[in-house]
Image (cartoon, rainbow over all chains, first blue to last red; front, side):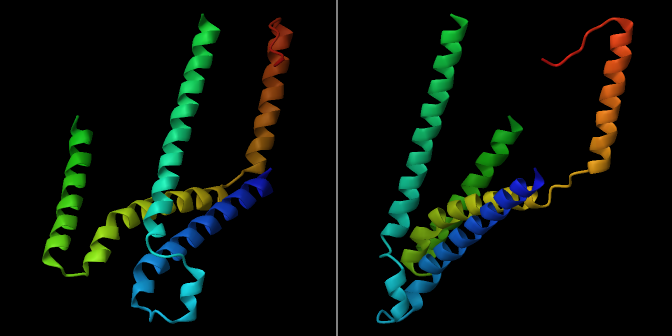
Length: 80
Length: 89
C-alpha cells in the first residue's frame, strides 16, 4: 500500500529533521545564549551532547553484531 | 583497492583539517572538539532524510502493474496449455 509507505517516509523525514535541528541548536547556538535565558531549561547540559550519540552508536553496533551472529548461527544449524 | 585509498585519503584530509582547526584556534576550542561528532550525526541525519524522501516520492505505476498482471496471466495460461504447471504455491 502506497499510503503506508508514504506515512513511513514522512515519519522518517520528520525524525531526521528534528534530530538535526535539535542537535545543531544544542551544540552550535546554545553556547552563545546568555546562561540565564529560559531556553536552557529545554536542553540538557552539554556533556550529554556527546554521551547520548556515543551511547546510541555503541548500542547500534552491539545490536548489529548480535543480529549477524544470530543469523550465522541459524544458517549453520540449518546446514548441519 | 583504489576505493579504499580514496576513502582513506578523505579521512586523512578531514582529520588534518580538524587538527588544524584545533591548533589555529579560529573557532573556540570546545567547538573544535565537538565537530567530528556533529559531522557523524549530520551524515546519519542526511541518510535518514534521503531514505524518507525517497519513500515519500516513490512512483508507483498502476497501469504498468495492471499490464504486468495481464502478462503474467497470459503466460501462465500459455504454459499450462503446453503442459507445464507453473502454479506459485
